[in-house]
Length: 346
Image 1 (tube, helix red, strand yellow):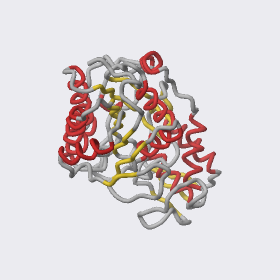
Image 2 (cartoon, rainbow, N blue to C red; image 1 turned 135 degrees about the vertical axis):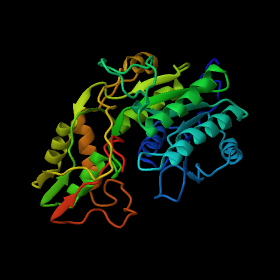
Image 3 (cartoon, one colour; image 1 turned 120 degrees about the horizontal axis):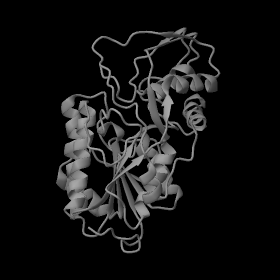
Image 4 (cartoon, one colour; image 1 turned 30 degrees about the horizontal axis):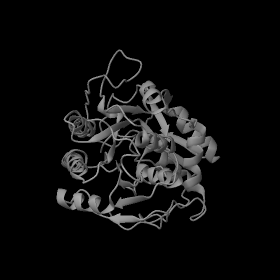
């Protein structure tokens, strides 16, 4: 299917699915700053935003309900930043990352005027790729985890629809995204929330290996590029392009936070399993060529943004009040039960 250029689609209008999430929020902010009329589709009421929101339980919505919502909003761009994360059951992973994607593809394909679909995938779709230095888009997916398998199945739904000429779409395959408002269930975001409580002792599970880390604001800029390019490849890696030792990232966050806590390593809780995938950085050459995109923010800037949105008083950095009972009060000891971007599941 030939990609329709921005001028053919009419005035640019965006709809972001999963707009209250970590990445969806950053995408809405980038689109809004670039002058796009954008509507965020959210599951429940959120804090006020500069862009309008529409409530829809995406996982529970029928294909007809999703189509009706999109048809009413008349987007020229649909960004799917929704999906099930790691701390869910395998059935929930399928519903959130496969069933929902199929409904999104069908709804976009049925719209009366063409809209580009930008679907956010995951580097975990590659799985284990021994003997390589970088993960390139031409590699076959070999995911070893239920999460990676579900995300790959969702990506295949999108790329199959593109090959059949049903939709104009691109999958941005993301590495580990960090930055402002990093989720507290992840390693770095959760660690920042713990540090905000000024613990005397910080207990962490063993941390090893490397990750390709990309700033969520750079991810949002990649979405912007993918939205306006006349034509795009079906799958494009979006990441930092280099491996970062996790211990270095944690140490840098501790330095930024000015923490004097004693760090104690503890074993992971029983029943958790560790995956071997995730250590290789992404090859981002295609993103440079196809989107004219490359990451602009260095690790220190990214971690500084993580810390600033946690440490600042509510309203200063724009963070909403916590919905889980608090924002991290001071304690003498803080114990981590954090998920390392999916490497462990409990």
